[in-house]
Image 1 (cartoon, helix red, strand yellow):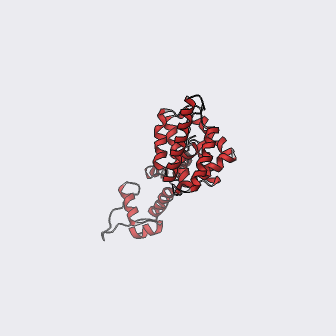
Image 2 (cartoon, rainbow, N blue to C red; image 1 turned 90 degrees about the vertical axis):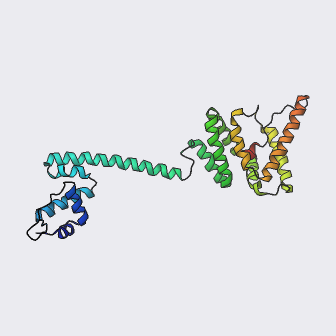
Image 3 (tube, rainbow, N blue to C red; image 1 turned 135 degrees about the vertical axis):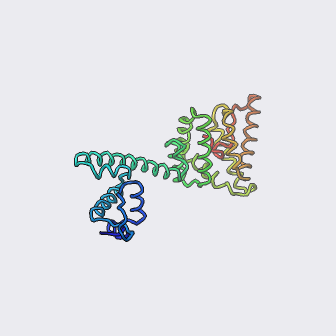
Length: 262
């Protein structure tokens, strides 16, 4: 006969576990002997080992009692059913892990794969993570405010990165973020960007419901970027005014490369 400590040791569980099994009715609790101790038989030790084995295999405690008394065909069917439940839980946890991994980047959960590919392309080109983050946030807002424009803007963005000159200017804008606003290099960059704007500026103005997108960009603009944006806006306004007099007919796309617009 075994004491509760000896029983627990034999089955590889704790005394607390044995008492828990007593409490839920999974393992019968013997009466105390004349000395006031509960004594357990070898059969109880075997039953406890079977309970522990089933529990360790993931079988719910509520189902173990029925399995202990089941006939072989019933036992096999119940195990198959339990295995199916465990597989479903494994699949669910695997999906949770996948989503948690994606959450670390903050991109794949909220943006389509085509946009994530653009962000990764920017990284491969050497664009700073600060600029990638700004681009990401702009796409998130754009998707919420003007989802119908997403396919075309994705095509436009990829086409621009296919053009070496556009890519060069994009990287130059990225590098200029921390320049002094009076740095003479900005003058040359403004001239290059203005020439690019004249060639590539979009037809028409920006949709009014995208103001939030561009306010997000302008909030992040450094002093150097602010100077670039102001200079390009001024030049675009001059062209527009001249166009109204019949001299030039361009729209306003000031700062497209600086502001990550499309």
